[in-house]
Length: 306
Ligand code: 13P
Ligand code: SF4
View (cartoon, rainbow, N blue to C red):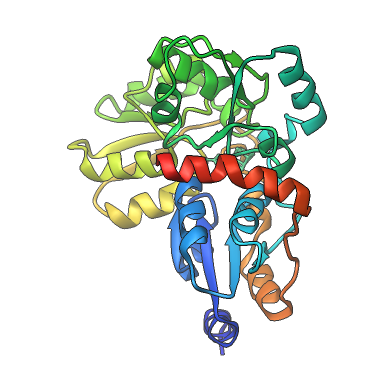
């Protein structure tokens, strides 16, 4: 049996579902039952009847699935697949920030640890952040964490003045405005499409800003045939599959000697690790019961509002 057949056979044997984020490598996306953005992964986890969920993504995505499905086994192929954005917001520091600003509603991006979610009023993803922020009366004082770029972007399009935690993603902060403009000069017909975790100058020269799922939908619906894609380059796999005749150019990072438009954490997962984790039912995600019982509320609230 080849590795794909072996994964399929283990999946059947264990009644397991494989969920993958768009930033996984193409081979993992192709073997997955569902590929989606962080909101879709949470939604699928919440409704699956499988006994085992293999979350091909990063740690916080596995935690979210485990919080939603405490009785299921949730596996992530490589437990070291973390997130620089989640790491930029330690729970104790965020709790102190919240204490310093009493009376604020706390809105947290899903890219956070379970402990941060436990002190959050409502979780958002980049797909629903605008809608959820705008569901609160205009004068509601809001703390938004941890992504300063997404927070700034939501402030700019909603006219809110949310108080922002000063965190960021090391991949999305790397894109070079200069190189994007150079590419745009070479391909004047191309649209620049950008994830809101990018810095403001990149967002300002963009034709479309949205979550990975929104970017993907836009490339299918837009009349344009060429796109400069300012987000983790794994998403281009699905874009190219859905629109084979269109051209997708990964936006270059500042340092042209690195592959900085790939998330080093997401890329820790491989087909071999996926096979092994299904075979051994390990590594498994666990979440402390007390934290889980608090973190479920803002996640459920998000799902209700999405
Ligand atoms: P979305 O999948 O919500 O677009 O988020 C991108 C991301 O950085 C996930 O870590
Ligand atoms: Fe985290 Fe950035 Fe990787 Fe997304 S791309 S998982 S935000 S480090």
